[in-house]
Amino acid sequence: MSDVYVLGIDMLKFGRFPERTVPQLGAEAALLALDDAGLTVQQVEALYCANLGQANGMVAQRLLREIGQTGIPAVNVANACAAGATAFREAWISIKAGLYDVVLAVGVEQMGRGLLGGAAPQGISTEGLLGSSTMPAVFAEAGMEHSRKYGTTFEQFAKVSVKNHKHSTLNPKAMYRYETPLPEVMSAEMIAYPNTKLMCSVNVDGAAAAVLVSERKARELGMKRAVRVKASVLTSDPWQERDLVMADINTCTRIAAQQAYEMAGIGPDELDLVELHDCFATAEILHYENLGLCRDGEGGRLIDSGETTLGGRIPVNVSGGLLSKGHPLGATGIANIYEISTHLRGEAGERQIEGARYGLTHVLGLGSACAIHILERVSA
Amino acid sequence: MSEARENTGPLPVVPFIKTSADGDAYLEGSVCKRCDTTHLGLRLACSKCGARDALQVGPLAKRGTLHTFTIVHRSFPGVAVPYVSAVVDLDGGGSIKGNLINVQPDPEHIAFGMPVEVVFGDALGRKDAKGNSYLSYFFQPASQGSSR
Image (cartoon, rainbow over all chains, first blue to last red; front, side, top):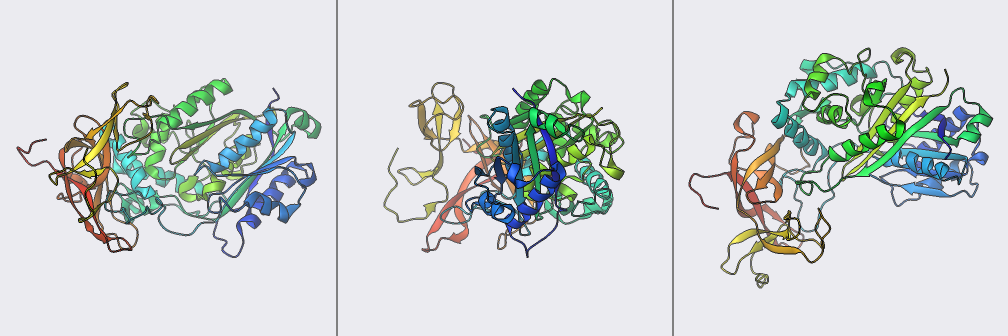
């Protein structure tokens, strides 16, 4: 089977764009990615478009009205916060299957502000009656489970936010670009202990897009800036003891990581950088272990050591992460791939990880869906 | 299993709250006869092993231990905060999430693994569009000497 390459990829600077529509935002990212690849919409053979807010709104087709209706198959993808990575993976699969040589994957989201949580059930609202189903609370409970097992502290979780906000000062495409010292993070408004407001990802609007091509096409168009997709994995959550009352964000990530390392033929030690799903500061520490960046129980020590900071052994969320770059749900998966690709191309400017060869992206959609991609630099 | 009686009282806030013939509320679960997994409520097949026609329905324990929790300080409009959102492992199997009441909403006053009991009561005065009131469950620190 053909290897698959990212030939063009880009994202909008995340922000708030209430005056534009979802298809418009997606279309802007799509054109940026096509320009990056040096291709036009006429050469695109299929489109996979991720969006949650208008999941039944035919965003992919409406996007094509903005950039050229060529009659290609257009598929709308929803998979919680893994939607963007799922669209990317569907594009990858279609090329792997030999159906197409040039496929466009887009992720786009327009979000309001405030808490994300479960849909209101029939009858009466159960929020604050049967515990909490808000995302900050759900991920706080997962973090507290880690505290229970390993003694992880509020301060250690808070350090994740300090690190990712610091990273974002170097990323011109991040929503926020200011530092948040530890005392500021810890004394910010408590949302759901131990997650303070600065330990919750930012609801923003955004879009990201990637042009994926077959090996044949990459050779034809030029490999110089191409990025090889070494592994693409998607999992759902297998049965776990408490998974009906406590979404299991760990197991599906562990399984996906194991499969991805196997597919790529490398181990976590060979990674040069990671963009993982820091939807809440608590989650990042869990995923250090889930992705094998450290041993179980050492996630707290890893953040203390500075090894995941830019310049450390295995920098994590150099983009600023969801905590500071922002988290437009459907766009996040492709934006993460953009960040890794930019480093592998040596084009990440001030935050560049020198000589980066392998990078990993991870997203987790609660419910649950986990997508992991491992990308490899092509040029010497 | 008795059928739900004529609707004279509050409605269950979730389908797995049941009321026995003598009026006592309990949590209903199902246990897989093949793999011995306990589920909260009912389902078509076992979530763990996929076995069909192997789920035995019955009441779950009224005591358990605190697995994990968070203290919610910001919620949706109209929801009183702070409160403790807790995941409880029931004695004998099954896990359930709900409000832990009658404790101070402070991590210093809540211990992982602490014994809790399941109690039932009105759903904080919440009513649906038709004016129906609801019966809910809550957790509270287990009182000394209370039985399962």
